[in-house]
Length: 164
Image 1 (cartoon, rainbow, N blue to C red):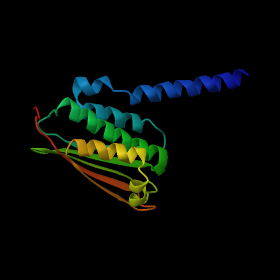
Image 2 (image 1 turned 180 degrees about the vertical axis):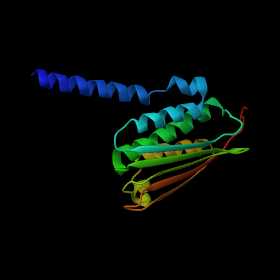
Image 3 (image 1 turned 90 degrees about the vertical axis):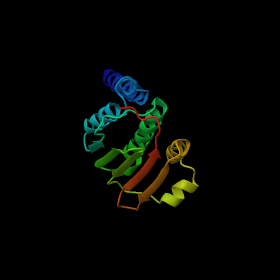
């Protein structure tokens, strides 16, 4: 009985930690998108069996409008969540590139992949969430995935109001 109670406590602790990380991190509003994504990728790297590589090209340390940063952060969270839940990947990579009036994200994993057309037709909640955020921001999405070859997302978002 004590062993069972210990297991339940451990699971509850893990669930609370996961939920708290899924809520809006204070670091996003205080320090911005770059720091929040760095924190997210540090947490992924703390997970055994998976490596997360993050490359940010933001030479002037630009800040985007708060709503845009929140939407981009949620998209990255969803892509990471899909990788962790379904892909069976041991490596994820994100390139976040700030240009004059565009932010580009190139996210990939080396997981089992999926049929993109089938998932889009089935209205997968995760992909629908990513798509709707990109559409709201006026961006473009391209997903490449093949069975056994992983998944790559290419996202371009036009941005106005970039602060340096």
